Structure formats: C-alpha cells, structure tokens
Image (cartoon, rainbow, N blue to C red; front, side, top):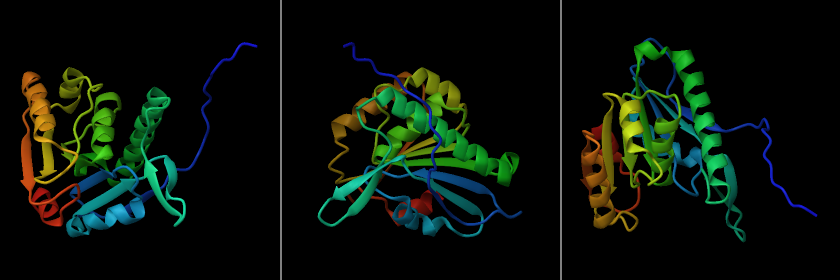
Length: 215
C-alpha cells in the first residue's frame, strides 16, 4: 500500500507569562523567547530587573513540552526540532505574530518601543520570526545564540529597517565558540548590518547586570 504524509491545522492553547501591566506610563514592550528545555514560568523571573513600571515583559512558551528527566518528572519546552522543521518553524512564526498582535493591540503600538530578545534556541527563533513574520521591532537582542544558516540575511536586513541589533555572549559560553561568532559577524558585515556585541564574565546563561544595561 502507498504511504503518504499530510498536515492539518489544529487549534490549541499556548502559554504566555507577563511581568508588568498596561497603563499610560508604559514605554517599552519586551517579548522574550526562552532557550531549549526551559519553561516561561521560571524564565521570566530573570527579567524582574527590568520591571520598573515602564516595561511590559511578555514570555511566550514553545509549543512542544517534554520530560527532561523521566525519573524526576522535570518538564521543559522547545521551539522546534529537526523533524518536520519547516512546518514547526511556520507554526511558531504564526504563533509569535499572534502574540505580538494581541499585546500591541492592548497597549497601542505607537506609544511603545518593541524589543525582542531570544536566549539560546530562542535566538534562532527570534531571527526566523523577524525574517519570516510580520513583526516590526525597534530592537533585537540575540543572547547566547546565533542566527541560523537558513535565515536570509538580505531579507532580514530589509525587515529590520533601522532596528537596533545586539549580540550578548558569555566569555565562557561552551555553545558559542569564537569561530562561530567570527563567522556570524562576517556574514553580518557582508550584508551591511549595524550591530553591537556585549560580552560578560559567565557561561551559557542570562545575566541580570547585562539585562540592566540593555534596559
């Protein structure tokens, strides 16, 4: 018998967690995407250093949860895997567009600056989202992660317009080698990106002092 494969669209619920409220004094919205195996209920706590009343921080969670340790029952989330990757990327781009539409409709896009931050796997997620989605950020921060090779940098440059671009990496980050960073910077210069690189004394993690500086 012939084997075939097809896809269907289904409705499902996605979890988001926020810090801060919607009020006339709001000046910034941060949409922050977690790394592989993290949950937003813990991830968003790193951003309490930015919660000063002028910012709304929104953390959407990857659509796939799994057990990190079956014996302990510890759960994490992921944005995608290599399996059926094109569909998974399209799904999370549409999902993140829906998140930003929902939030900005509530706060008023014209009154706030929109910052996107991706940590680790979330850096690739944010890169693809900006390139393929409809979001128009004022600033993009890629932390402990690189733009994946499938991102069309020419298209990304057009989509970003005059948005700021920051890369943050720990000096002892085992997942961000100097060679990888040099290759990425060469690609960015080739396509005319204006960007900054921030380094800190640490490994593959978020750093609250650097977040204060970014804020």
